[in-house]
Length: 246
Image 1 (cartoon, rainbow, N blue to C red):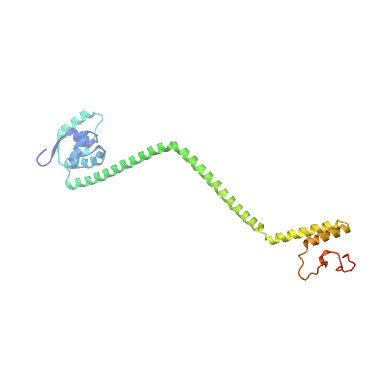
Image 2 (image 1 turned 135 degrees about the vertical axis):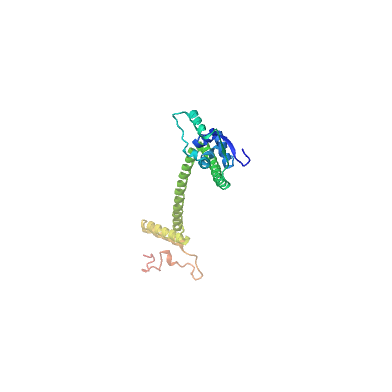
């Protein structure tokens, strides 16, 4: 390299760049021209720009084309005869270098993001694979929960219906005790009446007297001693005044 910042490269290295050959020497050449170390992933981005720079330095590089019929060693020797064994190259001007640096920075950021997302995706896939044996169990559990929910819903509806029926029945059962007592009295009176209807007249009179005695209230102060109560069923109170009450 000379004092003005130029550097001497073998023609083989320059031809690698012009032909797009992926060699380590060519990658080193690209890094020198843009004044920045390069990884192999950035080779395709930088190469077209550096080729343009080479062509601007030596227009003879514009028409370089590999002739396969000669074989690469023979073809390279022919190029050296015309262009020389070495090439003196200077880096790109600062403005162009900074533009390329910006592009490479963005490329690196995108590459890092892609690697990060790839790592996240791989981790998620690994987790999913680890959980896959439990997937069937989880599905079965969800089905059972759904069935239990349906059963609970049906039972809740049945309980609500039963509560309504119980409430209605409770309203019907709440009978007044006075009504019950009156009903019993009516039933007793009817039974006595029916029984009297089947007895002979004399027996009926005795039964009526007994029934009347049991049912008559205690004598009051106005009752005369020895008087026969009107409720007895025999005596002068009868309409016929014959003493039998018939």
